[in-house]
Image 1 (spheres, rainbow, N blue to C red):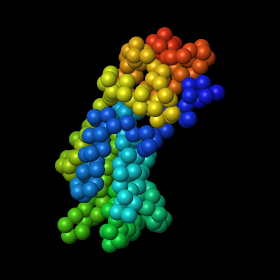
Image 2: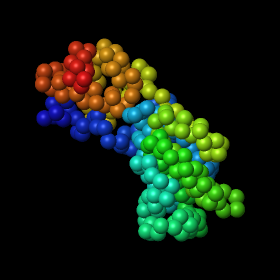
Image 3: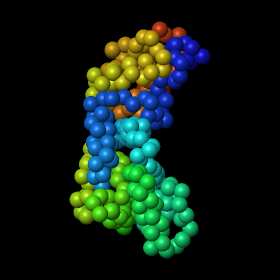
Image 4: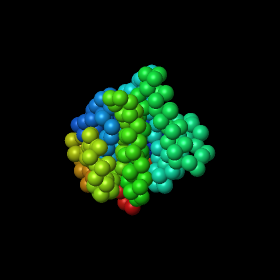
Length: 265
């Protein structure tokens, strides 16, 4: 009923990151370009920070979409708040390797063999560490840095991408050896007012809408509440559309958005 009423083929404001719904705002486009550069030129470590819901995962999914499976093997580790040994195990599991040993030496040897094997097959290895800000153990962060010691004669065997909320910057700054290894970094800023309009129109069009639905005046309270964070925009727009359906509205105006804000609080 929701889709039929508004003329959608699919929900326009889902919260699950979707690489096919990559909105190319100036900052999201620059983030993608920087990560692509780091990966294609094997720059060692790249870091992208941003608030919850800023679009870090979406950018990463877009990066994966841009990289050929014939040239790259890309794995993502989530929930990395682990001991150094368990982190190595988690990485091995992601690559489909045995991780049952209690010997760090054996585990690192298995990982290096996998990385070398990829290189011999013409594959560049990319390892993304999502939610990296939750790593409080400096020994675990240092273990990530040590992975860069796995090198061929002239290049790193793996490119690391660290993704996290702003506290990651503080955690990294306390570990100078890792900080100096980061060649590419970018902080993903929220959308400004104009790009919120473009973002909403993009999501509506991608869902099959043939009209804007949201009035321009509706964007003002939406901007004030969401502060330009895409995840918050999705939540508020979705709730506004639901309320609009209940009110049998033809457009989403500022009154409906304000009602949706109160409903979300």
